[in-house]
Image (tube, rainbow, N blue to C red; front, side, top):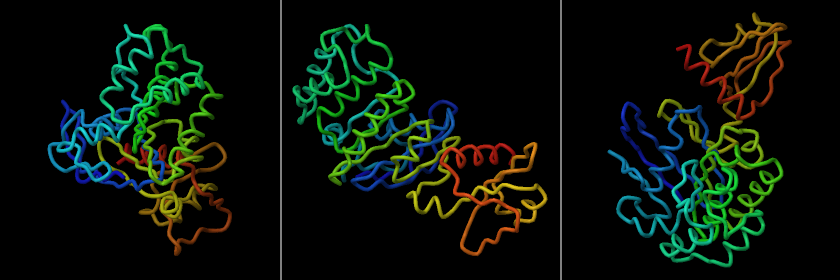
Length: 283
C-alpha cells in the first residue's frame, strides 16, 4: 500500500533524513515521536504537499510526484491544520472538494456526519476543533480512500467518540484493501490497534517494525540499581533512578540473561518512546 524509500527534505532548519518504511494493505501503522520530530511533515510529503529532495514515495504503486491525480484519489486525511473553507458549511465544503475525488459519495458523507453528531448546514468556522476534525474524518471516509493519514486527531476527541473512531479505523482495514497511518502522542491507543510502529525523532528514523518484532527487541527492567548495572552497558538504552529502585529500557534478544531480583516486562509503546528519547538526549 505504501512504500517510503530514502526520503530527504529540508524545511528551514529542519530536515527529514533517509526515511524508509513500508506499510502493507490491511494494516494500521502508528507514527510516533515527540513534538517536532517530523511526523506532520512526513504525512504532508506522503500527501504530495511537499516534494522530496531525494528518494520516492509510492501509494498503491503510484509515485506521489508523478501520479498526482491517482494518489489524491487514494488518500484520505485528517490534519491538525484546516485545509477547508471556514466560510462554507460542512456540506458545501464536502460537495466542493468532493468534485476532485472520483469515488466521493455524498450520502456516505451525510451518514457519517449524522453518526458523528455534526450539523452539516452550519458553517465550518462555527464548529469546535474536535467537530472540525470529525468533519475531516467524515469527508475522508466518504471518498473511499485506500490510505488514511491521520495527524493527531484523537487528542481533540472526547473519550466516547475516541472509541468509535478506533472502531471505525479498525473496521476500515479489515477487508485487507485499505491501510491507516495514525500519528498520535496518545500511545495507549496504539497499544490497542496498531499493527506496525514507525518511530521518528529529530527527523530521523529510530525504527519501523511490526509489533511482534518491536516486542521481541525491547524489555523494561526494574529493580535495584546495581543489579541493572550488571547488564551489558551497550544493551541499556536509558536508565531512570527512582526512590525505591531503577527502571531501564534494554535491548533484548533470546540470549539475554537477567539477574535474580530483576522484574522484566514487555514495554508499552509509551515506555519505548519515552526512554529512547531520554537516551538520545544523554548521548
